Length: 155
Image (tube, rainbow, N blue to C red; front, side, top):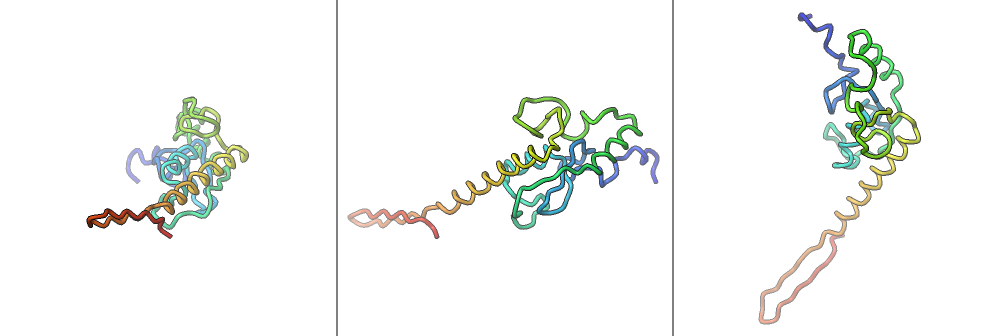
């Protein structure tokens, strides 16, 4: 153990996306891993249902509160003089970024109702992205005296 290691946040309390102490941890039901809620939702808004670790697309955006991890993180924070839950991880100050655990939400988004709402939003984004990918068109141009233009949707 190096000097100062006792102040290093344990890996199981560190969000794999933000690399910081979690204040509002959630379990991603599809992969079983724990993330800071705001960080996971922000990641999924850009890459709906993507596996953060690069695996295949996840089957669902379902999340549930990680109460035990949250309690351990709060205990670690108190033992190391880092104050209350607000300010750790991604869920610190209010930002007005929508309901629940949007980046900077004051109140942790750990109510199951809010998590379910966010999961529906992410799954809707994923469905829209899949639909857009299915509408990719093939363009065929024939350069002859008469120009032929054919647009066909990809299967």
